[in-house]
Amino acid sequence: MMKLYSGDLSPYSARVRMQIYAKGLEDRIELERPADFGMPTFRQRNPIGRIPVLDIDGDLMPESEVIAEYLEEVFPEPSLLGETARETAHIRTLARIGDVYLMNNLFMLSGQARAADRNAGVVELLGGQVVRNIKALDRMIGEDGFACCGRLTMADCALVPALFMMGSVIPGVGLENPVPKAAKVAAYWAAIQQNAHAARVLVELHRGLEERLELIRSGKFEKMMQAFRAAQAAADAEA
Ligand SMILES: N[C@@H](CCC(=O)N[C@@H](CS)C(=O)NCC(=O)O)C(=O)O
Image (tube, rainbow, N blue to C red):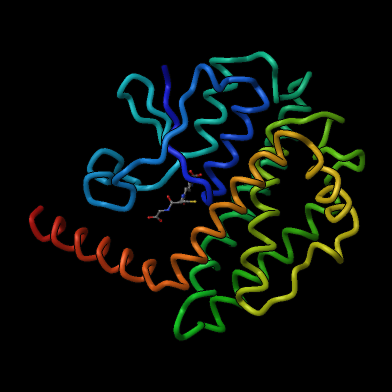
């Protein structure tokens, strides 16, 4: 049985979990939070050091998009790709907007929300990219409740966690959320949250966010980060 190393608050993991739920793969792929996530032992096994990671009988595969494409190849039905090569290319373009153009910038921006000394240049650069990319998405997104093709695809799996992040990160760095001004993205966001698979990952993401906020409020998050940094520095010094 395969295993997906994942975490509630990880939007990249949520992308793959949504795909697993939509394809009905829960009896084929176990979901687990790695106990040593953030620690040198995790990085020892996983050089990139991030989740999600797909464990195929001990063979570890990183990167959400790579995992998502692999799962489509290994479990082709029900397909979350297109009915033609051109449709599939469009699905992949929208998924890349979710991953590369939105999530990556939001993920890097998220550190600024809790930074003691917020860097205005970083916020302007990354926030500017997010606004520009939402405008691009607004011109490309489907208008029938799905990202495209009139049904759930890999594009929705990437866009749902990205749009969740928009709401959780953008206000935290003092920027205006660009989604309400992007009419088609706003309509899509309202509609896709009614989809059962999207709703399920959104519950998980909100649960993860609440847990994280509680850790931050109690001061435990900063202590955990310090412990991770110290353990990694010790491991690096030994190497
Ligand atoms: N490009 C990677 C990004 C994965 C990623 O950044 N995951 C975050 C959690 S959402 C992580 O593991 N962060 C740990 C770290 O930055 O050390 C993917 O698509 O899987």
